[in-house]
Image (cartoon, rainbow, N blue to C red; front, side, top):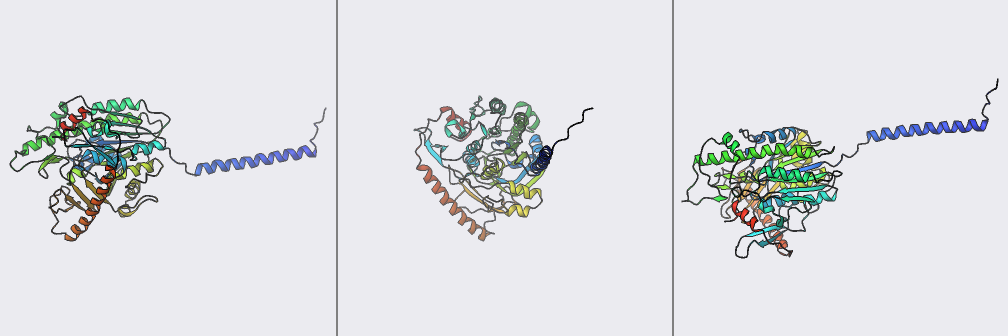
Length: 486
């Protein structure tokens, strides 16, 4: 029988040392794993889809109290997300409303040019010097796309700055003057297929079907039209002796308007899954808003662009998806210029220094915690403080308005003083100017400062000399068909 040789002292020492190191490595390894498990890891950048529904009034959305079933899908989105009850556009017109939305500036740099030498009206484009939402997100790794339908967003207007994939749809129907929602969805589907699968994406989608003239599909006419009348299609007010729409005519136009809203809502039901299907494991944030509303004789006119009353300026703003809370309503003021810094924070970066807004995420968090007083005054570290003041204006006229706290002061006529309570008078019917002289005095002073800002912005824009492509004659005809040009 052979006896097993016992290891010598040196070998026993080496084995003991090796065992000790194994124990040390094991302990350290377990500690590292435990530490990695408890240290929060940054969430991956979410996909972001921004949808603008042209001319959609806030008070014609079910989530804001409208009784007709015109927005069943958008109401579902609202229940799953965050509703801003006091959201404002910066203009009653598409161009400067969306320019503010996409640049985070009330009055970004624009280049002015005549559309045709023989015509006096002008058309603008976004100057290249602006930093756009798409450019900001592209800098932090986003793939970007846009589907445009409004002639103010034709290629020569350069709203597609920063978008790797973009398509402008001039529309196939002269009656509508714009592409239909089904064409928008088809274009979005084509562009989605070209997205880079290794990157998060940002998408901008613009629907025009709610814009006048209101021409809904036949199957929705049968559902929503309760009477027959005349369509007094226009963007403007009526002269004193000019024929005006009757109550029956107004009912007919509102019915048609509502049917158009339902058409877009049905299209949203198709659009959302299209983007979710290519989320590739990332969260997808959806933002739905409008550039402005439309008037139905609340102040003597139809359409938009001719006044700065609340029916044209207060818009829906609904955000849903990702890690945002569900079923939350925010009472604090939200503005178009706040969208850029909000999305910047979601993407993990700071908004450009040119952005004038502040992130809405602290307001959402405060509202979710049922602390609206904090929401009204608080701001996250690094965001700009806000006095909850809204500036509104139109490039093409002297229209101006200021919303400060609970008061809205429109200046539709420089010689007429108007003041309205936002909480109790959402359609600006009870003029408080005589009853609130101190408020009028303070807000007129604020308006003077705003006028100086606009003057400086225009002066800066007028100094730009960029090469301008010719305006496509088809774009001019679209502008005319939609009531922008006589």
